[in-house]
Image 1: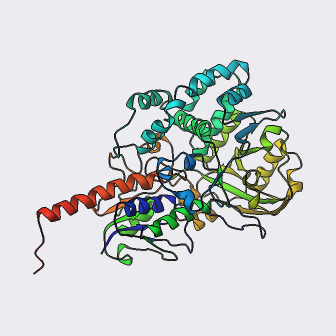
Image 2 (image 1 turned 180 degrees about the horizontal axis):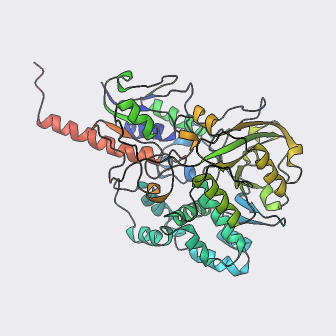
Length: 481
């Protein structure tokens, strides 16, 4: 009998499997797709030689992940590559605000009226970042805070809505860039703890950057898989699980799936019926004949580029996607240009690029024209660079990854209390009604992103349960005669 079976080979499932295997437990992973990866895959979606990341491409939470940083993933081929700047936010007048590795450069891009306010916001937390990120991403009760004072200070700043936090800025440049940071989790700007979301992304950039993985995001998943196999774990792909009986006997089952899928497979009925799925995205992957012709020079060397004219445009787009049934026009765009940092992604002189705009959950329209009109506002002549495009709206995203219910790439709305307490209002979010079944997907804290911390935290709950049972069996040996 195996100690643990993991269902789903995304970053969280693979991390949970590695953490258990590192502690001597026997582990097998079962994945429905024919390759591992989940939200960290790389495929030739457009033309031969153009390597695209169908979902996540830039990894601020990956390079800052306490779980990943405790593993020798570089030994298994994971190499982080950095663009000149982590992120830029261009404006219609041809200028840009930037999120740079340097706090001083970032503050200077906001202008003299907000430079000091930004420095006062981030500089108190940066010296304690490694401890803070571990405490922040280990909540709830998987570990006692190592620095409760700094964590409490961070909570006081971050728990209110981001619109409260941006009041400390006087000009539009800082407000717009920060609003865009919040929008990475598709949460309305007036939601609980959205200030913390923006602050985490900013601090992550200053601490270690927003890199891409050499060769594509698949490198993250492949490194985790190779490490797991060296630890004695096994991985089975092209293996769809429809019920628990489809799996081999094990002492624990760990699901890197949506709560809806877990309830269906494990027979939990309506246990997760109050769990909400949020807005989706419409994503376009491009093969380009050259770099994106951004008007703002700062955007040309940035790994990630946020695209919107101002904070109100971002807020309107998020509101339309999350609280109406219509797609925003103009959309707020998050774009990534991986080949700026990693030329191996495309043939010489060519580039890969993706952009997505937020749309309602399950939306079936086509946002391609609206996305390209928005890009042309900030990069005139963009369409002339397009060699090929691959589009994916909510139905295609959900078909590609079963965790994206209705196309929700966050595996559940990251808004309200559900941003912090997911998938249930519980101090033990990785447990389920069955004592041997656990959940480790992005539907659990700390939530979406390629960081593996949901898997890491869930693994802690699993090995504590397994060891408790071992100790109990020593105290009460079973008579098998």
